[in-house]
Length: 423
Image (cartoon, rainbow, N blue to C red; front, side, top):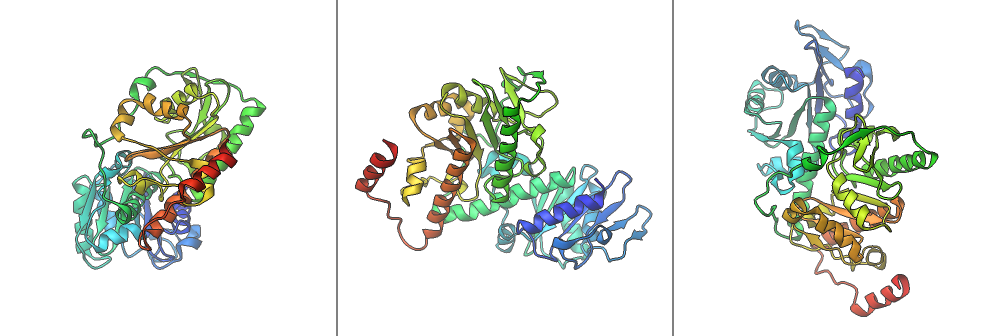
């Protein structure tokens, strides 16, 4: 895909997700020849055309009918200092602007696996937009190893090895910022236990994998289509991040399909889902690190046929505080979810078998502290419905925090629901 097309695609995505205003922010790509392609100044990001993108050639000549973004100087400065950075996103997303105007950096240690995605974060003091001083402040942070920089009273700048890489990093950082803001409404932040600052991959399982290729049956093709539809619906509704979490569906016995580790959800195709058969996966696909947990859940629970492990913006505040996600809010929430237990981050990292066993005890949703929520069901649609309902319940609890104390349904009401709907 041409740099112009890549920039337009990401610009549309950022604008549609509400991460910047129509003319706010700027995005660029440095191509293999060293030319810089960048969005123009003051043009609607939701309606960019290929001819709108401006190219600054290595020889200093500018190609394009419009003026390049006024922030071009800091893009150039970052590229000059960091040969590994091939794309830059600058945006004014609401949660990161909130941190910029209180002059703080989001503490992404609170969600370790997202910390791995984002990497080091810097902070640049305020200077006039487009000024040499602002460029110098930002460049200094990137030269020190930062992959993202909070701009005082301004927004954020994020770099990546590609425009997709930069977007995934930006999305994860904005997500963390929003979750921290909401978490502060319901309780005190709880950091990972056992001094675990970065989630480890299940490397011992990955090294035992063999590779295999199998033709698809009609049943499997239909499952892949359903997975793609649900994954993209969840992403568009903001219930899953583009490159974090996992969705899986049982095939036969303990064999299953799972989302890959190396393709963002918005770029997924039917063929991209990884098939796990007797610890073998389709050749050439990055294995989702959660596959071992999903495999153990399927092995222990033959009645379960799908799993969604995700970080939704409303549920995650309950993952990073000691506050429980109490679903005794409305009948639908309790019927579909019942009580949702929470396991510590350390126990999940050290023994995922313990978590898998919880679903054998009749649970259909479990929260992993500082990580995610895991939901199960007899079909992918039923699991997705649980996710939507859990997110709704969580959002209502966060929104009600300033209205008064939550009053749950009474014990007698719960008993009546259990008798009618769960007996």
